[in-house]
Image 1 (tube, rainbow, N blue to C red):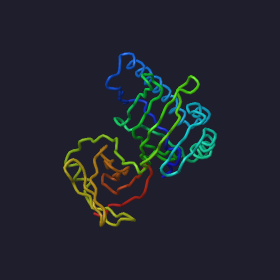
Image 2 (cartoon, rainbow, N blue to C red):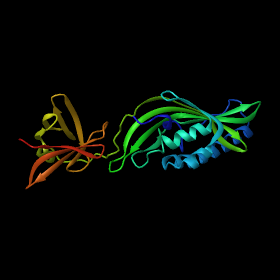
Image 3 (cartoon, rainbow, N blue to C red):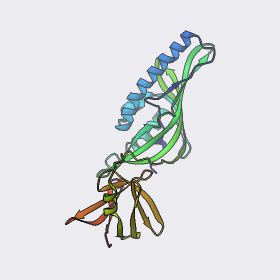
Image 4 (cartoon, rainbow, N blue to C red):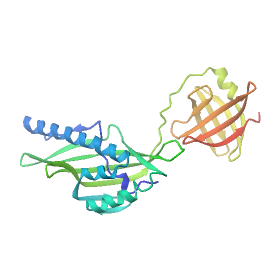
Amino acid sequence: MKLHFVSILTIALACCTLSTPVAAQPDQRNDAAALQATILHRDSLFWHAYNTCHADSMKLFFADDMEFYHDKGGPTLGLQKFDESTRTGLCGNTDRWQLRREPVQGTVTFFPMYNNGQLYAAILEGEHVFYVREPGKKEYLDGHARFSHLWLNNGGAWKMARVLSYDHKPAEFVSRAKVVTLPASRLKRLSGTYNSPTAGALRVTQEEKGLKITAVNFQVIAYPETATLFFLRNRDLQFEFVEENKQVSKLIIHERGAKVEEAPRIR
């Protein structure tokens, strides 16, 4: 997984919940709402710079004495070191790979912080996921992490001063493909046995709205996206049925948008 220190910075562009003190006065609530809007606007600009790997723009959103703590890569103290790491890590090989970050909707929360009734800071925390982009390949989901960021007023501008990035793990894939309804006759036509070079015999059988695909140590339910293309809900894997001379001749397996292998139909 390519998430190192670069998979840290996360602030949500939307779906933030405002949390105010129980006894907050109307002016305090108004100040907190204004701060929330300010930070989210700056956040939208920051994440555009992050996802396009514009290092000069990214550094503008951090205090000079910023501190970043990562549960896998350790601490990075000071903006200069962080900027150097960004240029050699996240943005060092954009011709070969690049990350794109998305917040997990419904997890990001905004907390205003007060000192004797005066708003002095804010915390954003939640979860986010990262996608990997590689030339000639379909973008794929890579990792998941939690974050907590402290924003402070720094020289008249709100900037990130402390960044915590933790609980890094592989992200759970959820397909965005839409299931179409196929007649039972179509599902029956695709059923049969296909010879996979790696898995051996793949037995394809009709299963309610989709197809059950079974091998020796492999069994999944694939759902139709089109009349010939089937997908899995929890893995970036697709099964494409090919017809030649009005007969289903083979099954092509795709993973992460790339062709993995062909399995000719044997019966």
